Length: 294
Image (cartoon, rainbow, N blue to C red; front, top):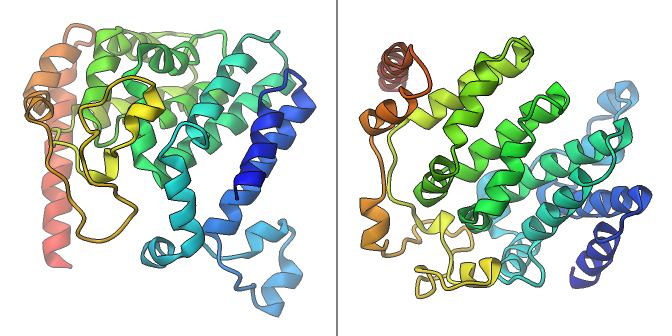
């Protein structure tokens, strides 16, 4: 696995778009081997399917994935900076954004964002990279009107994943005027309807009350990922085992915000925040009722 990651990282570090594309495909292939089962489709489905071989395999169940030796080894490698895929993808993204704008570059940015979202879901501790303002700014820069709508939409999805179960990242997002960036995109006349809907979804997500992070979003080697001291360096490693928990730093507990806290902040940039909060709470009630009925 290390040799494959080494080859892909070498390709990603290039300024040649064809080599970058190769590196992205190598990582995608590795993730497909880890996350997809070897069960083939039925003969009937195989005849009617025109997708590639990776798409002919079924996704492993979460419990099965956690017990998989390949996944556990991949998770272990992600704990250190040397083999961390998310940090390499962020460096690639920064390089691509510095290139001359072209449709080919935009496609590579989309592929990089797509892989980045997947990595952040597979290895939650990598989300701590977004404690850093420069990495958070990368995502916000992609929301600029100069970028294609598809890039803006995918950047918003990655942003949601980066903030998920990570209050510290949300504080970084707020500190660099992320709310202003997102609401400006939402209110702009040049923003497409699809991106407006994606932005609205993000605002609903942002308004949700926060809980202190669990072991799935914090790891002992996040200091290595950020190359700086980490408050989580004494926590236990989490590799997807059920029941694993860690002691959360008291500062992290105090640094969480309620919906009311966020409503005040968002209200500085948007007028109808009260309506969004009301919709959020009504939907929460309906979801709870549906779960109870089920």
